[in-house]
Length: 188
Image 1: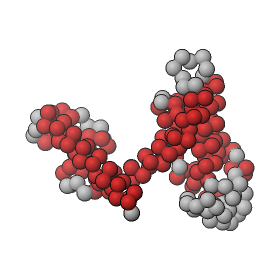
Image 2 (image 1 turned 30 degrees about the vertical axis):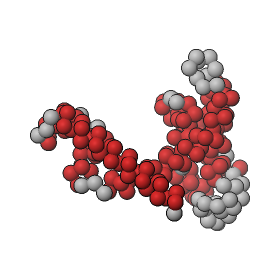
Image 3 (image 1 turned 60 degrees about the vertical axis):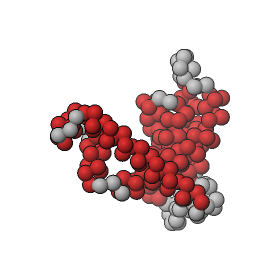
Image 4 (image 1 turned 90 degrees about the vertical axis):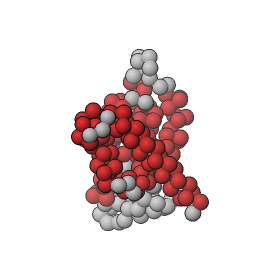
């Protein structure tokens, strides 16, 4: 592995060369997208987490095999795809496991979906920032701290139905905001 170089995310020949530190930072940076990719192929959260860990081990073990003229994301997705196939091969006895051929056909679509999910998460952060401080605190309590709706209702002096309705409206507002920002991004 070369000792100097620059890693960047975009462009077909963007990776000039990558140091060990840069390689491991790249592995760390892609974790959410890899998990979404693997989860979309397996549809099992626990299995996806296991396969992600196996993928990380392979990425670390094969760091020296990474060609500096390749795109890191493609390398990581390809590694994850092979780990999913290995997982499916090893679990053939399970009745509810996705067939290898189906997983192979879904892989390119899942890769795009993982990238789209990452983009939506970024846009959602901007949309949440537009909310009032009270609404942000309510969202954080419910979804960040996983506070029960009954507890939130008691804390805010409202009925559980009122809190459910408020959360429903905020989710719809945030979904509309994300879609609007996606549309603006697509036309710009």
